[in-house]
Amino acid sequence: QVQLVESGGGLVQSGASLRLSCVASGHSSSKYNMGWFRSAPGKERAFVAAITWTGSNTDYADSVKGRFTISRDNAKNTVYLQMNSLKPEDTAIYYCALRWGLGSVPQSRNYYTNWGQGTQVTVSS
Image (cartoon, rainbow, N blue to C red; front, side):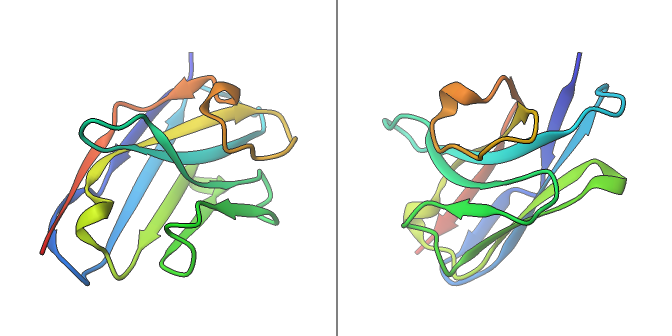
């Protein structure tokens, strides 16, 4: 059973940066695509970014394009989300998610089968 563990969240001021990490374990040598989602208070869990196994394709929500960067290091079984120019509206619990295989990186959370426990990001104004 694969496990995903996020880290790197925290409380920062508007304009600051954070880097989230997500480590996957228990998956042997299987290949998978990865995504980041977030849940803000009173809102549904929303797509943030996703990346294919090789890292050659990425996708971002319009609200984070140009500010966030997703990347991965398969040797470390880790996916990163570099978040720059953070805004109060970025405040949310951030979750990483896994989609088995080498297909596309959809924005719908229904395509992702494994989820981490989340890490809190709070941006003060």
